[in-house]
Length: 193
Image 1: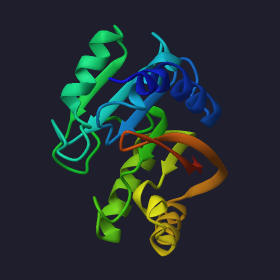
Image 2 (image 1 turned 90 degrees about the vertical axis):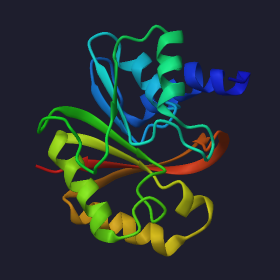
Image 3 (image 1 turned 90 degrees about the horizontal axis):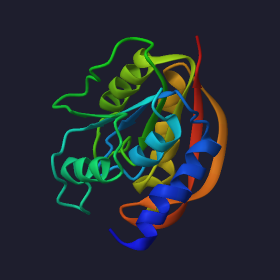
Image 4 (image 1 turned 180 degrees about the vertical axis):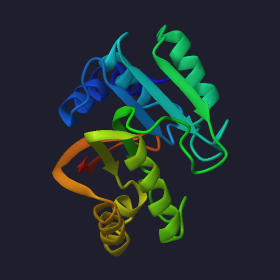
């Protein structure tokens, strides 16, 4: 792992996730976590009283090295005992209703992974099911934003709003996308109850 990514994981990623609302003791889901560019900083924040559920379907991603194997190595190297790695083969999230404080959907809720609206809605309903009242859905569009697909982004935001989430704030921040630093918009939605 190069210096800039290590620095991101230990410093910048932590600062960003704190700004977005993750706190000590929280239960966080990083859905489609890849190699853990957000999982590990979240684990530093939530501490021993919190937990981060790192969920992905890929043991290893051919695209840019985002894989659960690499995440396991990172978890070991940072001696994190508050990360639970969950490999899934469906859109169902294997967690209890109303059990988490924050869900990250970073560069996953778009047409590359979920080409049909009903697939994205299904993911959003699962997120709604597991989030506590007033919990945060943190959404970074990823590819639709990077490639300037404003119409796709508009549709996805409408889908999120249609599943009883309220847009709370938009953050324009530096973050990691496919292993590189980019400036992007992160949308913070609140689950309405």
